[in-house]
Image (cartoon, rainbow, N blue to C red; front, side, top):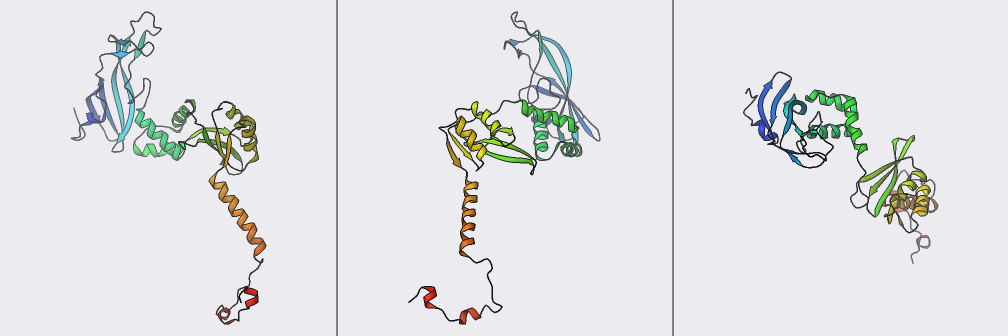
Length: 280
């Protein structure tokens, strides 16, 4: 086996996959592996089967090593399901959280690409990945991100926060709903009117407290769908209300223009009018 260094590569991979060979060139690293599993639970009925149907080679991309593209060649097994009442006849084995049954990338590589794309954009992430030794296109990254939309929304508690935000300032607005306990977003609704929020509240009658901004549309939807829920002005908008009140008060108390003399030291020698200052 032609190892690129003295590093024990097996320590970076699950024990169920044994490294049998490593081939290296200027741009890539190909790691051959063989499955060490001698049985697998049927994906449909859950019964453990020990008779495999055939072997096949899977090609999976992993995180790069020293900016080299890493390709895993995994010799895997197809198993028979001998359960007569099970609809599944053959099935491919899985390797836990390392790589899915039909994945072309390891889960850790997919997580990295997803995080990079969310912080940048799909085409930018693809360009960065290419420099790092990851062969992926912007279209593939879009498909990875779409998997997030297919996941069920996270559970929501009794207290939520509602506010609007803009994809493009002044043009495209949405409504974000966050769980007040976990501080994590649970839903993003199109628009910032009452209709979308009202439909969401119909499906989440467990909500008892809502922190919101001063928008009348949100207040109306909450009052109609959850009349017994407590509506709370969030901290940011309380500060805004306070600043607005202070500005209005200052406008009435202070003159529009304040003249500052050219020689401020003359103010120190100016006589003090005791009647104007209220002193005796």
